[in-house]
Amino acid sequence: MTVKLYDTMARAKRDFVPADPSRVTMYVCGPTVYNHAHIGNFRPVVVFDVLFRLLRHVYGEDAVVYARNVTDVDDKINAKATAEGVAIKVITDRYLASYHEAGDGLLTLRPTLEPKATEHMGPIIEMIQALVDKGAAYAAEGHVLFDTQAFPDYGQLSGRNMDDMIAGARVEVAPYKRHPADFVLWKPSKENEPVWDSPFGPGRPGWHIECSAMIDKALGKTIDIHGGGIDLAFPHHENELAQSRCAHDLPVLANYWLHNGFLDMAGEKMSKSLGNVVVPHELLKQVPGEVIRWALLSGHYRQPLDWTPELIEQSRKALDRLYKTLQDAKAALGGVAAVSDVWNDPQARPKLDRFNAPIFDDLNTPGAISGLFALSDELRGVLMADHESDKRSLIGVHRDTLVAAGGMLGFLQADPDAWFEGDASDDLKAKVEDLLARRIAARTAKDWTAADAIRAEIDALGVVVMDGPSGATWRLKD
Figure 1 (cartoon, one colour):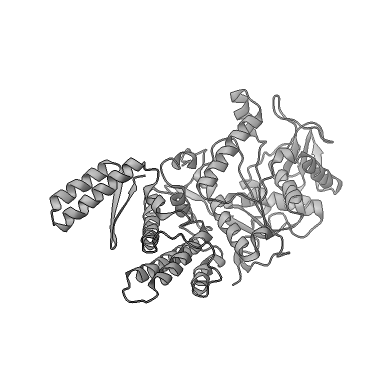
Figure 2 (cartoon, rainbow, N blue to C red):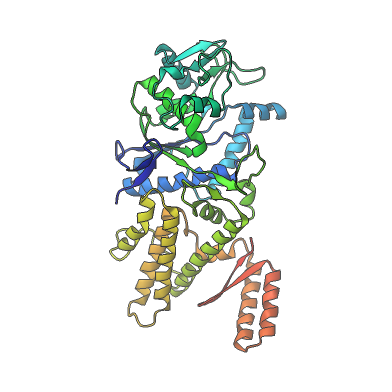
């Protein structure tokens, strides 16, 4: 199968063909670490984690180089550091650790590289100087600005004309600009702000030039994939593209541009400025990360996704259903763990290829999720069958296929018993199991009053009972 990706620049899905299959390069804009990131910030983290997994599956784990930058110098970081009376590194280290913790909780793989802006001042200054030397940038009142009129293709990525860009850009229309759309590459630092020496005077870089320089040093002058949220297409990615192409005299920065849609709260884009944010740092204390991940992948990445309590509840129920099937398979197999690699198994491979088809088609995660349920239903059918002579072997293949398929999306890698038991203590586990056994006995005797009373007692322990065709199981309440 061929991977197809929707390229923002082409406005169409294209077959993905890396420049070098032995070194596939992907850059995704990462966090500005001045506060805990909200769940909307983690949609691209999870989306591009799926792409990272897919590319590793196709080209090999060692062949894919995924860089996600850290913006660790910024006005908001400076303001936070000033308010707390600490160095900016105290702020950035704190919130980068929080970002990593949340990403790990959402079961995302760490990127191959994580370049930081403050560690690339030399390359940033070199790129600015190259732009000045080529006539694509100019100095004015202590600033260095990119000259958008020097780049005829400006606006090509976002599809905006210059008037639209001026109206929509979050840029300061300063009197020293030659054109209102020109943007800052270097600016003087204010009092008590971080400052670096440069040929243009002491100061610090603008946001856009940081990414251009980090892409160059981490991955190269032209890369395979550049990704991020749709809000970054303009002005950030438009400006990156212009800077990099002018600095290197090359026709492209990235061969494929991918952008994910917004996460909405009550019909509005989720943002800190609106105050309508959900923070994984807190949400992970209440809900398993796999549930949050499922919710983020339940819609196609290019479409808006409405974040609601109902979405979380539906995601939990979906995973409970899949893990219940795996739990029953584990019991039928006497506790034998899943085989880690069944991709070359002649029985499993056709099922896995069928499951993979939606993912290969522009990361169609809703289609792949439907495929997980299809595989689960096949496994359930084998579990319930009576006469197969090789039933145990069939259960093993179907179970391992479901687990391998789940792994493509970052799901179903936990032990199913542990999934349901969560952080329950041994004493609680024993008490719940005893109550379930008593409830089964009461139901067998058709003593419904006693059975209901026992279920209420279990509920009071903070435990959810789930009745199914193979019996009852339980999990801790979220």
